[in-house]
Image (cartoon, rainbow, N blue to C red; front, side, top):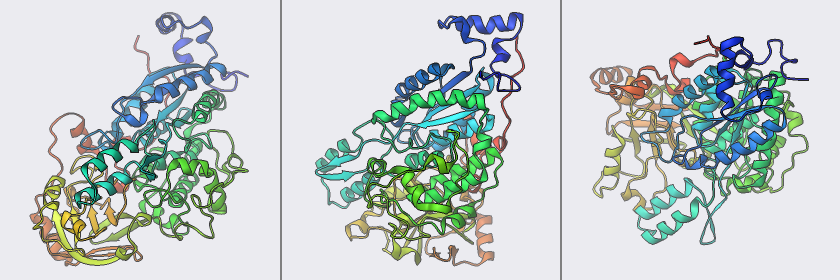
Length: 578
């Protein structure tokens, strides 16, 4: 049965290629210049292959090769593939923050899908913000869509020990600043961290979002954890090309997959894998695109009964290559039992229960069982509230220090990251191990883009004294590869008048993670008076995309999406221009 026969409204691309007279001739004739046979324009679904390939995005630099395997599958299944680029954002390169451009990439994809003769799309992403950006753009058009992430790098190895991208960078640079690691040692280790293609091989945001998009049903089962250089990634990409053609015939769209139950599964899996706090802001944004009610407190409530099962950096010892060979996501699904909604459907066309039926766990240290977990239930991301964060803040418990989960300390405050870095290396800095380091002006509107700077490097004076962690609080984000007792996403941010702008040096701050409390020991009246005197304000952008971003970005508890992009507008055939 052809795609047209199984669709009551026929193929969307027919609005271009089967249009009468001049319009049809115009569209067909221009594409004939690419050497397409006559039968490419009738009855065959047009499949977009969207890619975030860029040499400026190292994590995604191999996606053009992946695209070739996808296109083989599309041709084999009777579709006609068209590869196209969008903006790409590399977390490791872009300043001031790749998050600033996530919404731009989402808009780029959405408008490309909306304005072209595309019946279904395969999305090639991988680096931190490219994956959620592509899902947001595709969800907003609601065309049949299938995601393929590029896969993690192979394990880093240095002098017989495992080193992980991001996580080992933070640890080794701190060792270097403390004088316990030489320049030559650091340079040698640097060359051993990223030794293959792919995204971070720690459980950072890239790996987290790959796994969450798979459990939500937007990736083929068993593919997210495969290393980028594993031949099975190319094989599964070929099979995904076949599958998207079937999805067009079935009219299987993101709106049928991205349900409330799918988001709940993602939240629980995020807790089980010790996933990134960035997942919170991305899932909130995506949920608002598809009209699913999700709020910050869901991430705490749904994760409380889930133990951390995966012993992978930054929370643990192993890396994503080990996780893949230990059984991967399927093994985690098997351990969570009825905590997951197992009747949800995915791009494979199967329920979650069928998709992971028979999955095995091959390494009991990398992936623990439910009865003897890596960390106990309730050790996932916690949502804090109080007079310092009336709309919430986050802390990643699995990567924090237990002795700081309940803490009371003196605030030391900085209004910008650069000033903090300068002061942190000052041997005369008035700082003690029990102090609370506060950074503000780093939220969505304040920086702009809410950069990953919440995991402030500890003052050199403290490192030399043997201190390995301190409480840090900010309205910024932190890399999913990072660790420490870091309170982040404080909302509302200081630049829009949030209470963080009222904190002064010497104030006392109370952190009580078990009670989910973040409190500034100052009266409400004093906070109000201080805010009235505050000079905190959004970044003074005057033109271009940065101005658009600052004028329209929502706060972290709403996903930091644009206010005008909330909701779905299914892509139909646009009005003719000829």
